Image 1 (cartoon, rainbow, N blue to C red):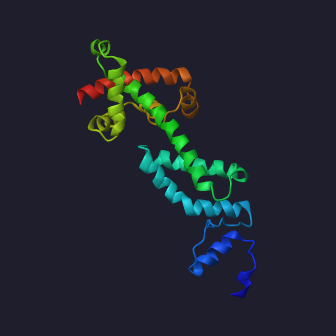
Image 2 (image 1 turned 135 degrees about the vertical axis):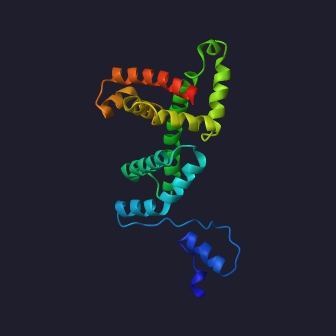
Image 3 (image 1 turned 90 degrees about the horizontal axis):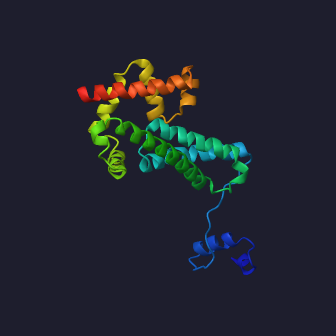
Length: 212
């Protein structure tokens, strides 16, 4: 191959040719980054090739519902579309993973805090004063480690037995992590009504939980 006698300007091409001819090379064989005709084509290609894998990544690393994970993945892609020009070509999967992780970590933190409040409400008053914060945190941590524990399943069944107005607020506040102003807007009520319904719902939920 006579043309190899002249230096090649494409260093990656030289590495490939050396590999084909069985030569050892110190030139890195870098991964080629696709060239797209338009930003839309680039985004569509990334979505089709990586969406399924990103959902699997999120399910493996976060103990959250399929709906929450799907929402986080979709939101990450929307953010990517918005900032596509700022993301280096070829780095999109890593950018998406980081965005999804940050979103789900926030969601999990909100739920963990709501879970602490809900679980504390089931502790009898006389025992609650005797328990330290560390003990309560230990219970919460144990609950978080396995979201399919029998007690949690029982709690979910009890929530379904609440009156509709109470059940809606409990689900939106505890399960979806919504604030009272957002709940009020969604249900067409005042934020103060949402707070009052939640307080009443917890009291009723405690009674149902202890009776079952």
